[in-house]
Image (cartoon, rainbow, N blue to C red; front, side, top):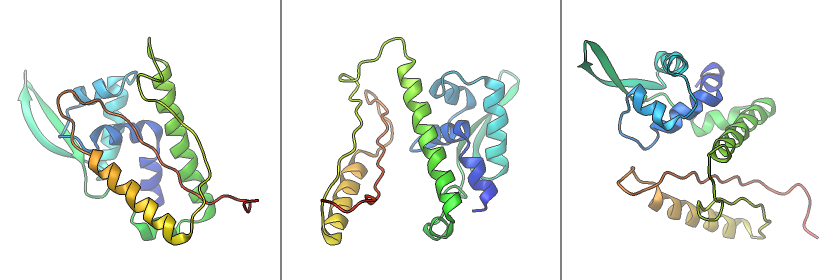
Amino acid sequence: MSTSQVDLILHPLRLRIIESLVNSEPLTPQEMLKRLPGVAQATLYRHLKLLTDAGITTVAGEHPVRGVVERTYTLGASIGQTPQEMLNAGREDQFRYFARFVAVLLGQYGEYLSRDKFDLVADGVGYRQAPIYSTDEEFKELVGKLAAVLMEAYQRPREGRKRRWVTTIIMPATEAAP
């Protein structure tokens, strides 16, 4: 994936559009708007066109509705970076990717806090950072277990289920442990 495609994906609104399509049936723009509060219809169409032109989203179907053609969209085949592309990115690009990732997290949290009512406990919201101490082998085992637990919960939407975000950030500490 070229840097321009990465920049295209990492735009905060376009990331939200992509997130609305992850693990979802194809959606119409109107269905996307329901998942993207505060986004103007014209703005959605403009960014959706950019994503579709780049092959990041694709038109999954078209059908006539009251004299116009309604399209449904899904993720295209060209989304995502290969592990090798990610490994080959330099320091500045890595920092930029991470900064945008964190900016999206801040935006999502801001949207949550902007609700008329929110309840951190009832909604299961929490964040913390804690050190872990492990050998490389123990760490690989831990990551494998976390991935297995998350994959179990990673399913398509069904009646009665709420969509939640689980974010993990794993990095080595910069200081040696005392």
